Length: 386
Image 1 (cartoon, rainbow, N blue to C red):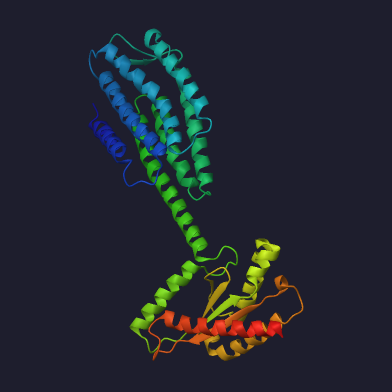
Image 2 (cartoon, helix red, strand yellow; image 1 turned 30 degrees about the vertical axis):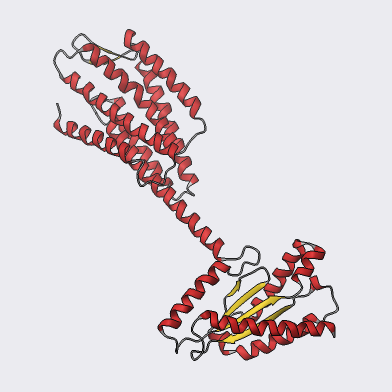
């Protein structure tokens, strides 16, 4: 018996057992995929053992014929089914039942061969021999090879072609190993190639799903960091920014420079109550565009239904007084326009500049900006009366 082959099979079987035990731990696969990977690993280990003992009995003088038959039958029956197991482990559900039925027919043929020797038989010396209809087994193996190749290509395409080459190469390992073993029974590479394929597929799918999961997390982060309606930064982003500024103030309160502008939309409730929330949403979007145009170099946050905050640094901070004048002029003109409220882009605003001598946190600056905004809102309401 070839010792290298013995060591190879032992390594393969132990690897499959370890993976069958470990597959449910620290994995991002779902329960069904875990179950099918476990079945795959167990069947691969069983098949490798059958292949090994089949070779062992062939080398042995006067091997037990019945046991040799049963082992070869198991090996021949399991091999094509492993393609289905690998496909199902990969999440493939479509066209699985026809393949299961087809391979069920193959098992029936193998059972018939146990008694007739049409696919294989064990001669009087206990040696394996191919039967006259051995080509039927080759056809079923060929079908399983084509099936797993198609499935693997679909997996590669499904993962946006990123892993297509790797997936095809993994399938090629199984096909080459199995084909070599089928063509020449002395080449004992069948189940070792299946074990390698199962292991690499498990690793590859983990990487694919992990990448998809990370992409999904990134998308969700972007969604949560931006307001769905206006596309400006969200309340979550604003709260995180407050923490950043509070930390900067605590670390270096004298050298930090920033200002806050609070904007509160006018007449939003009136628009919602009289025309409906669709018009109200349009009103919010139009007002938001105006606010963003005033603060082209500053982040704008929507922190409530009708409330926006801009945090001024760099260029906008340096041009604070001019921006205040521009907004005040715009607000006066807009609220006095003789047009329906829904067509206006009216908002009140309040500004506050961080002062290290009296502000201990971002919240202190925000309070002063809020107070100024409410004062501005009163002034604008007086203009409506006039």
